[in-house]
Image (cartoon, rainbow, N blue to C red; front, side):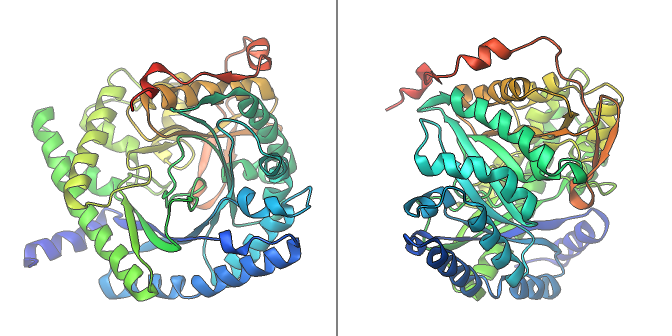
Length: 452
């Protein structure tokens, strides 16, 4: 039974420390929507999404009002479209993206994920069609998110896919140049993609998932920052324990909302993703947590150690609070979406190399990175390859969301708006990776993959 003190503590977290449910995401299986006739398939997709998810926004709003917990986003993830559209004769899948966008608008969700291909070991004809459709699809839609899994620990890295994604990212940036390359903010390249991730842009309803499910992403950087600031004199071991206990409380609240939402929508509860996800709002920053630990600026020496402590304590607290933790469940450091991170990058304390290193201890190290618009596809591919390698070798999910902003150079600022925030354009290495990337092929799986 909750005590009055615990109730008041949660109220304070919401009112003063930006505690919220970042997303309630419904996963929907579309495999029964496949049809040789693309128009029929799209009609089935639209009908299934709008019938399954028709009440998700209403339920989310009702729960937020009843329990006083903000639920920022209501989203949908679907079966990878490359699997559904593959039996059609279509050479371009943009119409499938338009169908998803129309369905998302009809039910009122913020985003819909699943314009996705899995190519870590090679391409099917359908995978290639979907990938080549991404620039046009993201230009012509508002709420569709795309993802491509190019590597796994078991399979290694498909370097042909990595190179292709370097080109596709450039094309997507050009296609959405009028919005500062905004299409790239809805496109993520993955290694070891989780099939139950509720966060965009990488949400997808995996083939091992049930017919329909509810996954919840929680977030509370402001809450964690507050407890760190209140414990300035304790040692790091005690601080880790304090963060762990706080993460436990946040996760319990998230699972409660998730289970209630699932029950009211008549679908199974899936997982709670315990990731800390920042926003541009003041006080809702992951970087500020580390600076409250004693770092003058995020990115300086000690940042990796501090982030490792934070992520580990977060996972331990979440794992004690729920038996169904999934998704990415770590710490997000998206540069444009965290005002303190953007400031660190602008001041030179944070570089692409440091962000890549931080991948070893957090969820996604290269997230919402703005780079010069003239960055070559080969350089983008090389950046992807570096980040993906971290995931393959360390047997974890890693990803890249990078935006080569048309017309922008190092030092310029780019505005994306809303939760996507603003960021400085960061520098990339000037030495070429062209010949390395052009070799192509598949990087073999590491020895650690032989775990059976």
